[in-house]
Length: 428
Image 1 (tube, rainbow, N blue to C red):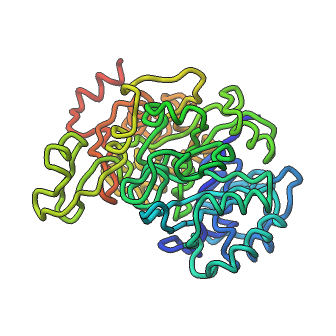
Image 2: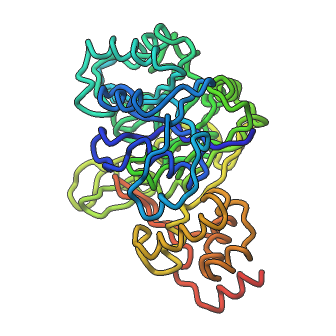
Image 3: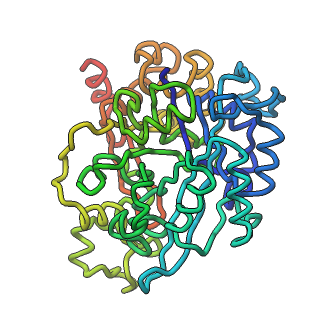
């Protein structure tokens, strides 16, 4: 069975998240996005875990689903047909580890997936003796990431621990400011229990393929969403049994016949793709950073080193090389961003969401619209410019000013394009 999974999101109990990050709203948005299996996020948080137990029930396949249907106070979602087996949840959480190792402060984020609540409760009980789990949906724990991996395996041998957004500068496995230069340096003798790495919004699989040392790891992509409309912006497409075991085996084996592809941002759109200094408005490629001796030319402080730079430093393959047997990927732009640019409106404006849900109600879900629905059908319903935007995204005809130092990149589909050029593309 082909289905889409987004493992990594957050609840309303994480910092800087929407109050709408509730299970009932998330389930509806997952259907809108085309996601069949969605991470619960934040299962270490006591209040969120209480709500998980209150609202979800075991589905018998290592997943959970809503116990019943409740009304949603949302003018768009309340009109979306929904049944209990439309969306399943997988127990997931992200944890921040800050610790000292080999005379250096390390700051690593890990995702953990588990198949049952009993395992979650055992793990939480041990973690609660180390940290205040109520402080944040993504708790900060002062223990070695390797020691946590050992603890997780002890409590649930079937769990999966996945280093999160592995290239971001501040909190990641390969981060320029507080990470490591290899997976083995972090997890040592427990490295064989790491099966997958999360690429993050600022990198895509092609960038990770440049490191031969990563060939043995399956690359996954997730939204890391802090608001419901952001889920699925990156995700994973499987063709397995609809079960925790089916997904787990596909990830561990890295089999392209069962793990079909990942859904990716254009990595330049991520907020740590290039180097730079946000306060000074300085954006540099790795080459420019080296030419400036890693120093901001305005304030003379050290630049924030981005994902592309770290990949360049650690890579041993040329750009464009693809090792055999790797899981492919598709670069997509969220549908509301395409509509927003076509209309000259904010991607979060009401007029954009009106157009968005008109398409959803006609064609089913966002992923189908972005990848499958014929362009002439989109044009009939939404107009030629929105259809042209989808076509350009599918062909990769986009312009992006790269993100840097916490600032998202700016993606443009129509910038500087005349009406004649649009008609030419349409004819082509």
